[in-house]
Image 1 (cartoon, rainbow, N blue to C red):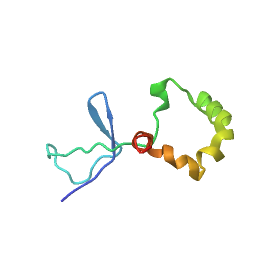
Image 2 (cartoon, rainbow, N blue to C red):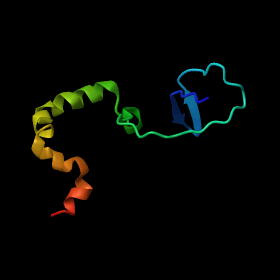
Image 3 (cartoon, helix red, strand yellow):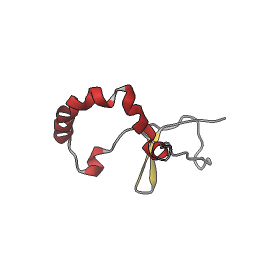
Image 4 (cartoon, helix red, strand yellow):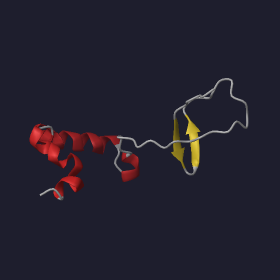
Length: 83
């Protein structure tokens, strides 16, 4: 039986979002790290008020960022060697 539970890696430990049901103490586990699209603002010393100010200031660029022409920058490192 496989049981999946979300967790967060902090300071060398895995913190589970919820406790597993019907799993015996000492059961072996396999941990797979998934790359998150979320940015940990606190680790960059940005508080919620600063994040909101940044979001507000950058809204003028949204149309440009989302334009089809900008998709070349989605994988910039690979794209720069094609030209």
